[in-house]
Length: 268
Image (cartoon, rainbow, N blue to C red; front, side, top):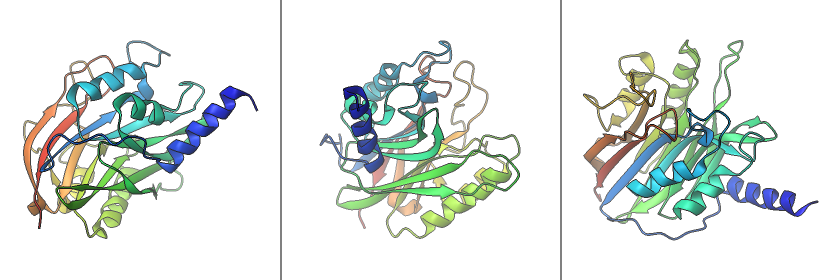
């Protein structure tokens, strides 16, 4: 096996296991800043075929969130040529957990969680897809951190992108069912491919509190955005207060705008 292949194998093992590499400190132990970012496999939409992982890392490093929920992450695919979960963890000096959704071009494709806190209990939950819809398999990634002496569950997902919401409804019901079993508070973030007022977000709202429900800012497309499909939400509502919610106007790195939220964490 060549040295290059050995390197790719080692990086794949690291990402699959969610190995903790860094011990960076959060800015405020009574607050948690979360970013949700669909990174479009680090391909700037204005640069067909280009992989610019530095641009994604620059956004994260500029705003310094404590936790990042990433969607559309490539691990050693032909098109990207790198393990984006590992590279972003290195460039941001954060711990990570990668959750594979599908095989893609000789590698893996899915979602990831980055954290300045130590991550534990990383789990990949497969989400349902209705037979005959040809929907792409989707997953929910979960991991545990401790903030202000309190354990929190971080959850990241990317729901089905088909026009019909059949699979998204199945998937959000599965997610709320999985997270309903958690005894610790939960922060859920991701690209839900659904807008407020529809069945998917209505189901989300029955179980979680979104960090913003009015005048929240559109998240897609990156230039002149027209709709909101990227969300951060939490439960139970008594454990958190929203201090800020912002959609970042970053038009180069991805076809989605990142969402960043700061929550105050209450100990109970």
